[in-house]
Structures are given as C-alpha cells and as structure tokens.
Amino acid sequence: MLDTGLYWRPLGGNNIDQISGHCYQYTCVERRGGRLCRNSIIVDLGKFDNFGALGVKDAIAAVPDIRAILTDKQLGLRGIFLTHSHPDHLNGIFHYLRAGYKLPTLYGGAYTKIVLDDMYDYYGIKPRLRPRYVVITAGDRFAFDGLNIEVVSASHTCFDAFGFIISKRGVTVYHSGDMKLDNTTFFKKPTDVKRLQALSGRINYAVADFCEIDQDGISYRERDVYKTFIDLIKKSRKHKVYLTVYPTHVEMYIIAFLVALKLRKNVVFHGDAEFYDYLKTLRRYGIDFQNLALSRIKVFYQIPEDISELGNEFVIIGSYRRLDDKYFVRPKDSIAFITARYHFAQFKKQAENLKIQTVTLNDYPLLRGSGHAFMGDWEILRELFPKVVFIPTHCPDFVLSSFCELGHLAGFRLINPLPHNNMLYRLRADNWTVIEQQPALWMVASTDKKFTAVPQCPTAGKGGIKRTYSRRRVVQKFKILEYKLEKNHGG
Ligand SMILES: [Zn+2]
Image (cartoon, rainbow, N blue to C red):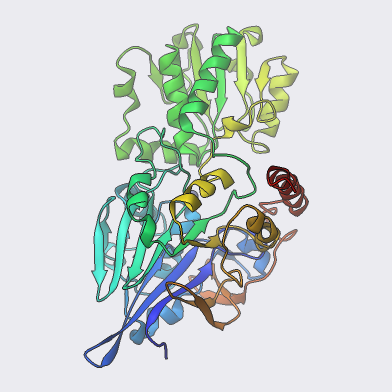
C-alpha cells in the first residue's frame, strides 16, 4: 500500500518506438485524522496508433491499461482530465465505454466536448452510458482532499488545449500537455506564461511534451506562418493558390483562410471526408468563415460546378490527395503549397508535372506549422522554473536516451531513471524514487467490443504505421546540437 506522497505513473505516451496512447496517473496519499486518504486522477486516455502491429485479429484500436485504477476503490479515482481533443489523448474513452467499463467524470474543454460527442455518436455509445462531462476553462481549480489541480491554457493546434498544475502540499507538477510557447495563435488562448511565471518558484517537476525536443530554437509561430504565406503569394504574383492542409491540422485551415482574406482571394474548402468532419467541428465551435469574410471574399465549401464562379483570384484550401485538372485553369498563373512531408506526395508530383510553381517544406520548413515546443521553448521555461526537474514524455525511448547526454550540456535536469510506461514514481519536493516497475500493457479493442491485453513492445516496421521518428535522423540532429552547445561553452 502506498505511503503518503504524490505519485506519478505513465501508462502510455512514453512508447518504445512510437508516440501515442497518452495516459498518466496521479495519486495523492495523505494522512487525515489518523488514516490514509487516497485520491487519484488520470490525465488523458489516448489511442495507440500502431495497433495493427500487435497481432490481434479484427483490432480497431489499442489503448492504455487503466483497469486497475478503475477497479481499485482504494485509489479514489476522481476523474479523467483531458488536455485536448487529439485522438492520441482522447480516443481511449470510447473504447473503454464500448468494452463495458464505467468511467468517472471527464474534465475537458468545450471544443473537446464537441469532438467527444461526435465520437460517441460514431461509436454508437448510448447517452446514458456516457460519463459526466465538466467543461473547464483556464484558471479553473479543483481540489480533491489534498490533490489540487489548476487549469492553464496551452498553445496547441486545436482549440481549448490545456496544461495542468497538479499539486499536493509541498510538491507541484506542471503537466504541460501538448504545448508550444507561441503567443500569436489565431482564435486560441496561448500558453499562459504569465501564470507559469507566477508559479515559477513552486514548480518542482515538469511533465513535459518533448515531442519535438530535437528541434533547435523556438517553435514556429502561427503569425509567422501566416506572414510567410502572404509574402510568398504576393511575390509570386500568381492569382490562383492551391494550399494543402493536413486534415487534422485545423489551425492551418484558419491560417490559410486568413491569408486568403488578407489577399482578397475567394476561398474554396475542398478535401476528403476527414477534412470535412474537422471543418464541421470548427464551424460548430463557432468559427464562422462566412461571417469572417465580411462579404469581402466569397467562401465555398465545395468546388462549384461552374468554375468561373471562383473568379480570377482564389485559394483552394484542402487535403488534396491528387490534383484534378479541372481546378487548374492556367498553370502559369498558379502556385501550390505543400505543407506536409509525405502526405501530399502525389499532389506534388502532379503539380510539378503541370509546371505549376510549388513551394515545399524543404524551401520553408515553418510552413508545416507546429503544435509542440522545440528545445528553445523548454529552455525558456527552464529559466522560469529555477528548481524544475524535467520528466520527458510524448517521445520514443531512443529520442530520450539520446537526449540524455545533450540534456546535461543544455542544462536540463532530467528525472532518472527516464520514464517508461507503468513505472510508478513518488515525487517529493527535492527527490524522487521509483516505487515499482511493471511491464506495461496495451488493451487491444476489436470489432466484437472485447479487449485483449498485449504487452507493449516495439512495433517499428510492423503494422500500418511507420516509425514516427527516424532513429538515425534524431541521432544526427542531436550530434549537431551537441556540437553547437559545446562551441558555445568554449568546449
Ligand atoms: Zn496534440
């Protein structure tokens, strides 16, 4: 049985070679009136993407194993706090409900609720089986007998993304969620650096989104992405713009729209089913493109039958897989932006064959935008939190182990040993201990609504999903960073 203290356990999110299925347990144990009082929360319950590699027939998802927390009454589970709406942080909810589990109250943003409600309908989860949902906003505070949670806003690629300040007397953890330090986000509250600054002396640990820790400098700012598009389009003097957006990157729909509005070009949204689903969610959240257009430009949600309705100046914003010739009235008067490295490969080839001017991430890396902090963002926070110990999450094992050496050079104090899923840490103000380390499991959900427990294992080269990171590329990048740092230190 756990003694008094604050405990932290990752259940997903520190994968061996993939990053998804995020899920973290926090448990506070306090002595009250002579007896031990335990309270727990879970932060996020995501889906592991490469479930196809786990060898379970008819698998439709894999999710972290929270069965013990759900069933062990002694742990006092008080709720699941949701940082944001992305599937790798959210979609475990549906699979637990489908498998017949009851879940505690969910705490999440208004946008997250819209996404969640859609998914309940999609998975046919009856209203009476849906857990209670408390809509949270930045600044909200919750207290569960000594376990305190404060909600802080976070800049990410979707709306209502949050970090949490989780504390018990004497120990405070900043759980960043997916986050960058961009204060130029459109229609989204940026990461509340002021609030973090006010808390700075108290923060002992940062459970940090190290997804892009191998990127030097500060993460790409939305305002800079916007400005770069405008500059490039103006300079090109082209009237017709083909702007690809990755379906899940809703912030790019907005940036692309604002670019078109600024340049007074009509807008056509055009893409696959997933793209339209996200567009619908955006509009339900209250982003009304027609309204934003202020009748300065025309907005279409489909390519019109009669292409001349588009006029001479337009931007087609979409998740193009291929290029349909009918959109291209005059290739000489067109420019195409490819904002993802592989997703739009076919489109890119076609555009090039048609001799349309193309701009890729090789030319302007920032056009992909970014949802996660780069090393520079974390350096800023490191300066803010004088006594912080970093607990890196959201990245594969091999990234962490290569970062370890570099981390010292760069002045990051990292927790040791590094977290692996299903390790239980007790966090004290000035030290920590690993209490236990059990093998971690994925619960694989299949079409028959059953769960199969499977050990978490490397899945690179198996299943439908390639490794998110190339080991070689990461090692190379770290070498370059290390060289730069050594030079700076006069080494
Ligand atoms: Zn995310």
